[in-house]
Structure formats: structure tokens, C-alpha cells
Image 1 (spheres, helix red, strand yellow):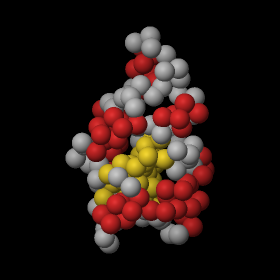
Image 2 (image 1 turned 90 degrees about the vertical axis):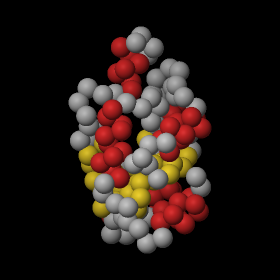
Image 3 (image 1 turned 135 degrees about the horizontal axis):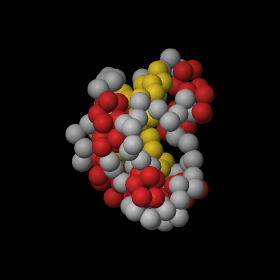
Length: 148
């Protein structure tokens, strides 16, 4: 999906945006995305590019899945209306372009740790932090398998 496609889908609907790596989807991701979607009419997910994942130091061998595969899996979920790649380390440019009514992140973040939160709040949007599903983590799963 391109940003212009995301704008066309919007058509007066309440847009929710979230972002992340979404490398190996688990129950925590699925629940989080469903809860994010419930906050509006459309959920667009920003997905870190492969190079961005490597810069974020997620661990050796990350991402496990290519960007194209991660986007395909996300877009197959009922709760996700579309996914867009971003190359930068933060989704500030996408947030400024899409101007979602709601920007959602998981409970391992605070609004103060999100550079894009200032953008959202400046145009009157809302930043929502959703709780994480305890014990679910891609990094932890890979560590338990001895792959990180």
C-alpha cells in the first residue's frame, strides 16, 4: 500500500495508525492490532524496512522475515486495513503525512519516548498506549530458541 492509497481509503473515516517491526507475529501482536483497530474505522500499520530493523539493533539475523512477507502477513489480518513501509528509524514522516486521529503504541512505550507523539498532539490527534500481552515477545521467543 502506498500513502496515497491510504489517503483514498480514509474517506472521512477515523484513522488509527501504529507501527513496528512485526517480524514474527504472535498472540500479543494479534491482540494489540485488534485493540488498535477498535479505536477507529481504519487501521494502517507502518512497518520498519529491513534496513531500519538492522539499524534499530533488534539482534543478529533480524529481521527474520523480509519486509514483503511481514506486510503480507499483516494485511491478511482482519484488523489491518493496510500496511506501509517506512525507511526511517521513526514514523514521523508517515504520521505527518497521514495525520491519523489516533496513534497507538504498545505498553513498552510512553508518549514522551515517541518523537511522533508531538506531531499527533499538535494537530489535535490522540496518542494511545495499549498494554502488552504478558510474556509475548519476538525477541524473547528467538532467545528461547537459541536464535539470538
